[in-house]
Amino acid sequence: MKECPKSLIEMREKNIGRLFHQAARIYSEKALVLLHEKGFNDITLYHTALISNLDIEGTQITLIAERAGMTKQAMGQLANELESKGYVSKSRDPEDKRAYKIAFTDKGKEALEAAYHIKLMIEDEYTQILGKTNFLQLRQLLNTLLHSSP
Image (cartoon, rainbow, N blue to C red; front, side, top):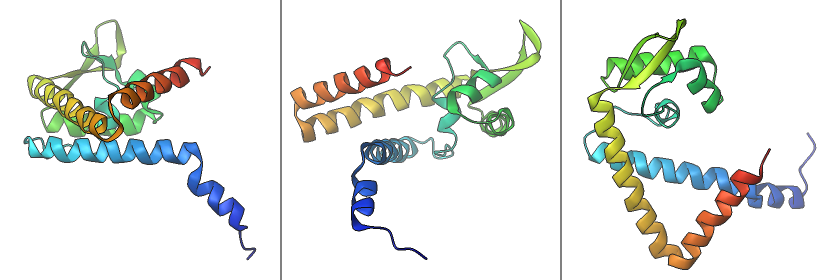
């Protein structure tokens, strides 16, 4: 088997895409640990694909799946799991009887509120690490990248 050149290995380790992915993963794992500490210990990182793409007023399962980059079937499984845990409810969409609409239950809204406060805690921690100016610049730069992509 052909050995990879050292330059390719270094580029792979230091490319910005990988850094984005690693930073997002660390952020998500940190938030999940804190969410578990607040009593929502039956939510997994996998479940956050649904939770983070679900609108407050409810969303069709196909749209949630599209937003998360998952199949409708995989998202349906997540919806079933979160419904059995009491975080979401699943019902026929009144506007399209063929589709299912997912909505937060009261327990789901409590978890969402806890997650919001956790995210503020993490942002405070990141502000301490980076400094306020750098943190605000990071947020601005990320928004610029997100809004400039097609």
